[in-house]
Image: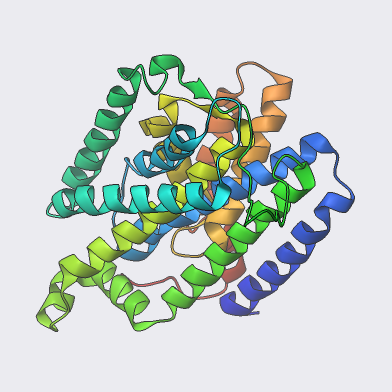
Length: 318
């Protein structure tokens, strides 16, 4: 079976399983399932930079945190924010921040790009730590989940775990369809060309900087949506959502699952989150066995978990 056919079959089976999952799951499993899907959206947004465009960022959590803080700012203390307004503001704020940061950091490359993105993320982290209005280092809580009210009619209730699960599943499906369509468009092919040889693409007449910036803004917007969903689920917004550990975890999911493939980040989010939960129940020193698992996976699966579908194929070039 070719890699494309295998990935297509995986997506269909995964969607069917995710749709039926609430029929069998308890409250904890529903919450865990929604958490995994939120991380999958975040990891896919980062893979647009790392796996498709060739831009390794350690500051992607900045946009995730901006989305979460957007919901916090728009939420009254004991009343719900409007979900649609909060979603629009979170995505727009994250995209605007990505545009501003991208205009500066995309003038660098390689290790300098990694360090500059990390620096911007840490700047926002310390800004949140020092802001009393945002709760400082302890963060702040959202006591009431946002309401999707549309002129007196609510199509779903985010306080209901099943409803929230399906909203996140819908967001994941839309993200996948958007990135899948983008990957097969001229825009997606140009991004891959930039990853392989940016100078050649520039010589062919493509405005490389503009394409990189567009990818950076889109990735930031999707990360902002994931951040809003995370804040809506857990109701706790802290500066750690902006920090480098959050970025590193998403990057680890991308590498573990397989870069440059939409199913890879989703698979990485699933495996890493489940491993953290299982090992956390066994020992308080769970990072040690988790690290060993990741090391073994990196040595034995250079293409990530999704690369298992393409073991018989020739290695990719570039």
